[in-house]
Length: 248
Image (cartoon, rainbow, N blue to C red; front, top):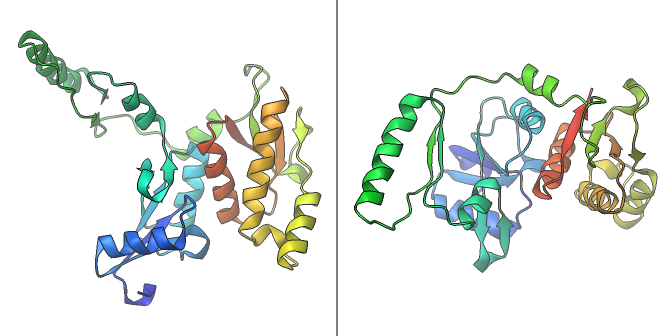
């Protein structure tokens, strides 16, 4: 089914096979098409993404201004798909309940219900419950300010996405992108290696290995990089549970 025939265009930011995207399209039914982020137009309706930073979320909102962006934790053992996130890891610990309440008013009925279960001897677990309507709004400007590097940050390895030409000298270890450019160009035969699907995968793998073996922050020059490639890099690193910030 082509996108021209579809009323609803669904974008996946996590790497899924063509078969998996086709299966999801079929499950959604007529009028839906599922495409990868690299081939998605800005008019997408739904964007499925793993849990990412506020900065990466801002990039996705800029790329797909009309879409509803859904944090998605996906575990499909039969198809070999695993994009677990913080909620999946918490649920795996098997607490009796997990609640997000942005006010005492929202918390009160939760505690009352759980108390009734405990007093009656019930051992059933309560499904995950979120109260998201009344929480304070966090603007993208606030998120950007929150992720700016400072000298007061703990001495832990952080991946820093930096426009090197526009930024002051930064402490850390730069990832040399030239060998990756050359490798992708040689393998694929392209003059624009940083636009190829292989490039962000290799960069992310190198970042993870550097972070594992070095206490220094890993610095990656993303100046002039296509927003879709930047988003994919951040999503890949987010899935590895590494701290990351963007500067400036």
